[in-house]
Length: 535
Image (cartoon, rainbow, N blue to C red; front, side, top):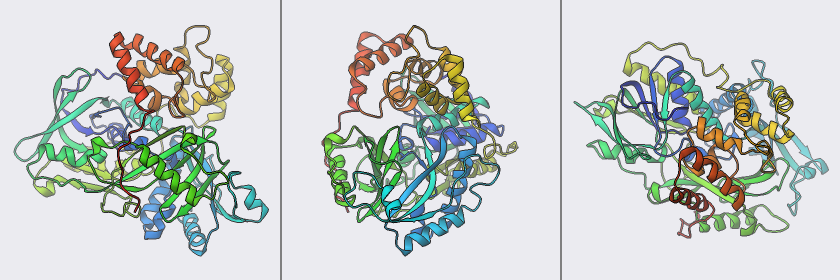
């Protein structure tokens, strides 16, 4: 992936925002013959797209608001993603304890709306909902519960082992069709001529150089920064939302074998097994303030621990020291208000021609699960504006770049070819697909292929991230190219190794290396700023 490719030439489509919406749109457009450039102000997938619960799901709770269309779309996309990215997305069970009539009817509707979940030769079959009672139900509960339910519903959605790498895979798929992309390039303002957006003035944050990018159509897919970018450029001021939805997750020791769902007066959260740990979340609380100043705070962590302990009926309450890591983000909702929990997760398109400004489309809201389909909708608008014939759609049926249908076979072949530890072969194939062999080839030295953690990761991933995946900062590697940073501080020795490898590849001075070390350490220090009270 060549970040240094020229970004000064005119393109059919300029995509601003490198989250999952922008990456999926870049793939949709480039695979159908449109010259496409994607620019992201930070790292790819570092905003809201990195603040997920690792699920690809239909959105069971949206049935409460009778959003049958959104649930149906999500369930259809769940099936498609499990087919086009099978090494990332696969079925995973969820336990819903003490179901009432509403929950039972909801899951009956969920099954009906996913009538085609196993259609099309999908190897990863999703079973229907089962009601389990008595000792069998209690056996499914986490051992940490004081009073496990004796009546549960067990249903299936899909787990995504790495939404960060799946976002990157969409982007690699786009680049495989000729799209260009650059991270750490900020859109300063739109280029406007005769009431038409004809491109953008952008700044490379690594070099400080400004560029003028011209495009026949521009899509603003910047998530929570949508209004900020619009207000920099357009004469008509677009009011910033007064309230956004804050969602955080906590990573702890493993608490359950299956995903276990809890519902209380502050919403819902789950204990989700992930990489031999538990992922607890999400919260869904109002946030009032500037997007750029948001961060996970100690107050929000402790507040969520209070909710967990009040709702989950644990034998031993979770304490702050049980939290190995915490992360989160602000959701770009299509509707705003104080009730962020019940706000719709539908996507929203706005053609600014309706406001007298041609050449600009804003894409907001939506879910990670439905991003591919949202990209199709956005692209259909782009075609109408650019008036250039588009090729046939491919994204629904074609494997994403590097993905393989034969995951287990790939694991065994890689293990035998490279003599890898079983954990390492499994991790590399599931996270890198058919690129795993190229990654292993980057390894040099007697211990280069030895596992550096319990998941089987290897230091060659760091080299591969810098050379082939545009990783420019240490947190790009820790959290978006690898899983090294997600389970608490990786330790001084490993952190130093990563910084030394990146420094050698990128030519960091001693001062730059120290700045990167401070940058990395900052992800394990949480602010004490006050947050909004629970509603």
